[in-house]
Amino acid sequence: MAKKIVPIIAILLLLGAAVWFFKLRSENGKHRGIFVSGNIEAVEVDLSFRISGQIKSLPIEEGDRVEKNQTVAALDTDTLLAQKGAAEAELANARAVLDELEEGTRSEQIERSRAALKAAESRFSFAKDEHERYKSLYKEKAISASTFDTKETALKVASEELRNAAQLVQELEKGPREQQIRAARAKLTRVEWDLKRIELDIEHSYLITPVSGVVLVKSNEMGEVILPGATVTTVAALDEVWLKGYIGEIDLGKVKLKQKAIITTDSYPDKVYEGVVTYISSRAEFTPKNVQTKEERIKQVYRVKITIKNPNQELKIGMPAEGYILVDPAEQKNESQHVGKP
Image (cartoon, rainbow, N blue to C red; front, side, top):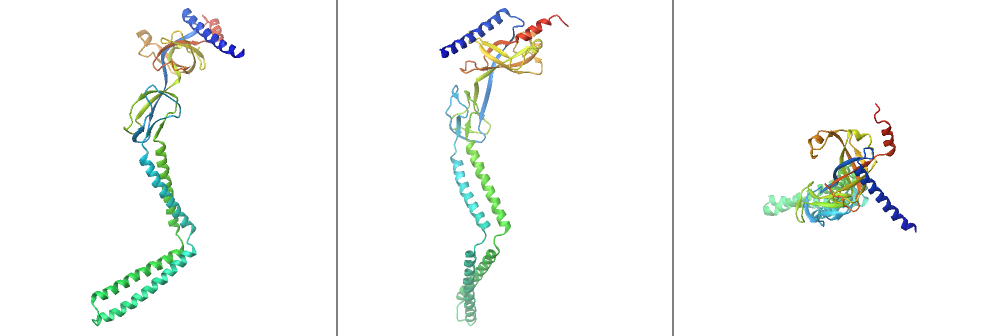
């Protein structure tokens, strides 16, 4: 029984609001409500990519309903994914190098380098002895110049190997220098930031609507190359709209934020919408130029915004509408007591 009573009460309240509104219009009572006319407006969001690229997916059409956080377009990410793979490999290598430097030189490495040094010393000693022997033979003209050149080259190679082996032992015994560790850390940080930048570009390759609403404009098609900041689509949040209107200075003191209002439109003349005053301008301005008469255009007025719930999205952007801001009965009584008083 209680479930049946609730919708009946809601219908009665709506009918009551409608009767009150039409009574306001018919009586044109000065203190019953403040008349406002204007056009319906809504939040319009121009959606664009932060990066350039080729549009790979665009699953929307003008007039489609979209939900908050829905992907409405996407760029091709093949190149970015390849860059990500390369950056991940470079990052792994940079971490391994730094770990090895921070760990320091192991004793096994030092022993191996010392053994290599001894082998290099033996090869150098042998090459030196051979060089001296062949040098004597060459002076005696017992061998050709090319044969002696071969031994001389072998001595130079053995000498270079000995120098490198000795340098390696010295470096390993000293351990990694602090400059090497700092350089490895810096490289690791750079590679990490490169990877983050690529991951961010991949994230920015998907265009996500921040509001639920209707697609007003679709500016591009699949396959087109888009630049950063270029509008791909415009979404209007029509679940909640507002009537933009103006009131005169004489009515300014009667209007407050959160004050209720009732609205009608020419498109739905028999339907009444409930609204709430959500903005009152603090600065006077001349009546907009689209007002018909010159006498009205030279008047000073204040802009107001009446927000209206629009779950069925019947109210469209630009639609003419009019209504009354409902005045508090207590304020009406107080004002009537002061009529004619200084």
